Image (cartoon, one colour):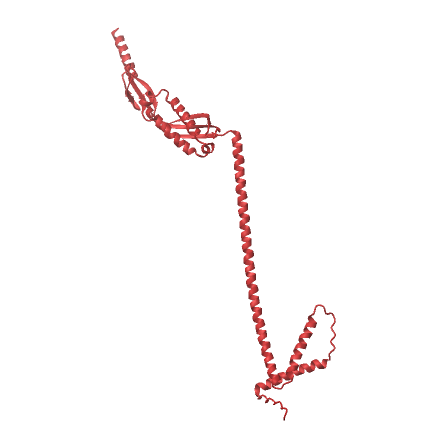
Length: 320
């Protein structure tokens, strides 16, 4: 009988010891209550607290957690209805505050994020809500983190997952984008045409300048050629005049022959002339050419022997 009672007491002691041992997993902290009052936090690992006097109050997850924000309808500043959802990343830093400062921590965070999301996005236009997600995330993070500090948690990130405007607004935005792209395309086409016209005009201008320079150069060459031709003609006329003054009658035949040949050349090259009849004798042309030959011979003799000019004959007076 005594052996059975001792065995029973030993069994109760073993059960009591096992009930007093608290094994806390990594990433969690347990709040320990003494007759319902918080006393301390049990860290991960082996912990011993006498049973019936101490008990585990809350098991708090100390790892970073993710909380989904369900989709909701929000009216923007310009009265556009949009649907949005997101996620919140948070981590418990103080287990007692997270356990005893707020009831239902997850529900509290969810409602806090929802109300602030409506406040932040409702103060912005539709275009701003679509283009300033980073600003929305930053404002939500600041506001929610400040509000949850007394709860012993840290809001690490707030991200907007999706923003869905109504279908009619989406269609209007698509038309607007199409019109904007067409406008840009038309502007680019106009600029291209303008640049093309400018380049074409510049090319024509350069071409006209080069043509003008070519004509100027040609005119200069023509004038120079005419000047040299005139100088040669003047020289020939001077030589002939000197020959005539020296008493050489063949110089006149030279001029007559020259003009005669030029006249024949004009008749021969005339586009309207089919048949040309010249009432002249061949002996006259031969004689004229012979006169030219005599002039050439006399010019060669004059180069060898310089003959003084004959004295001018004095005109007789009325009494001589």
